Amino acid sequence: MRPDIRPPAVTVITNKLQPQDDDLYLIWDGFEQSPNGSVIRGHNIHPTNRNGEPHLAYSRSTETEVKDVETLVLDDKYSVVEPYVSSDDLTLIDGHDFEFIHEGNSLLQLADVRHDQYQTSTRPRPIVEGVIQAINIATKQILFEWHSLDHIPVNESCLGLELPDYFHVNSLDAIPSGDYLISGYNTCTIYLISGATRAILWRLGGAHSSFQFTDGYNLKHVHNVRFRPLSSVKLPSSLHTTATSKTHMPLSLFDNAFSTTNSPTSPSSSALIILLNLLTKTAYVLERYPHSGGSYAAIFGSVVFLPNGDRFVGWGSLAEATQFSQEGEVVLHARLGERREMVGSMKVFKRPWSAVPSWRPDGYAFSWGCGWQTVVYASWNGATGVRSWRFYGGNKTKDIGLLGEVRRDGFETMFKTGIFVRVAVLEAVGEEGRVLGRSEVGRTFVPEVVESRGCGEERCPETLDEWFKDVADGCFERVEEVRGMMGESQVVLGAPVIHFN
Image 1: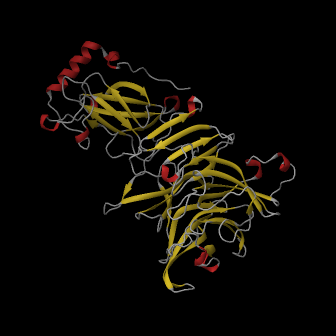
Image 2 (image 1 turned 135 degrees about the horizontal axis):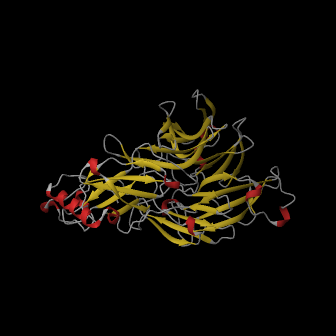
Image 3 (image 1 turned 180 degrees about the vertical axis):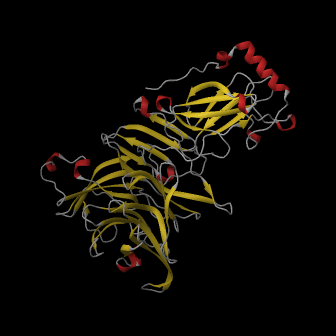
């Protein structure tokens, strides 16, 4: 793997999908560092639509917390359309959740306001309150704003500790009625907030729940609460003809069932679909998809409904993802990173994405010297439509010829030229042979004897940052001799042109 991109490996543990769906490899690595060298952390990356066009959206920060972030929207060239930052110095944008509403004209986001000395019922102390904001993107006008301290006292925290972040808002969803679903992780409660009056319309869980679980389910710490249409869930037969949006409301959520301050509430973390009866004020679990290993995600987690009815679950801090059929069968299970690595994932999505980056493809060519073949590596961070790579090489830039074409093999594709070439260039090829991008011309890197320790037959890991280097002119006379003996067509060694249907 190229030295500037070192993402955690994806390990597929279970895969029962069709062959065309089972090719999992890296497409884009958006790793960044700030000017002072600190790591920029990305949160909540997901596909979205802006003005009818597909985009990627995510939040980023230089803090270890998901606080004080800026929200970025990228087009299909990975160019930033517009960054969204806090409107004042007191409100810190929270990267747990955001979405575009009003046909993409407004941004609905979470935020926090920190009070150094807030007067509680006992004494003044630091408090962080949760905030909801709906902002007009064009004018930056705040259309809607809700503050937790106006409605929820600090003594409703379910942690049993006097932590400043008594509420910890971590989930937000605008529902068809114009109201807002939010989750307070540290109050163990899901709230429906009126979009008209800002009043709390009902609560699920916590000290003052409006609903009683008829199955006795104990719901506390959750993430990624979403409203779901009745048509998208498995209703019992008794409700097929009687349930309406006025009588019942399905919710999907990720139940962490665990926190560092409370005992587990279930045998494992799980994805849940809960049905609320708005008339009887009762609730029960319609669908539950537990972690197959019985593990708990201490933080984060997500649930996505796929078009075919499957449920796609991200296991938060466990850094795993599972696709379930509606019958509960695991059809795909994958892990991000190795067990020993400190890797986590806020949310996991599975959606179509197509992009051609604004930057060129990258290439790296390596050889031991005249008597050795050149090995070329091709990659294009962010590109989705590459079907094959064409490799060109030769004695000098003006003498470059086609060496071969091979099918794309994951994020980075290796090609063995069979001969030594001084310079190399590569092309990314899409459907019907269309050239999507072309790399710059680069020189083959040949290590000196003193720096070759640690080099393998096909690459030199310790010196990958020195991509290209001049070598002795005598090598190139040998290249022409080999070409003359083999014939031009024989230079393509085991690499016929690949055609894709």
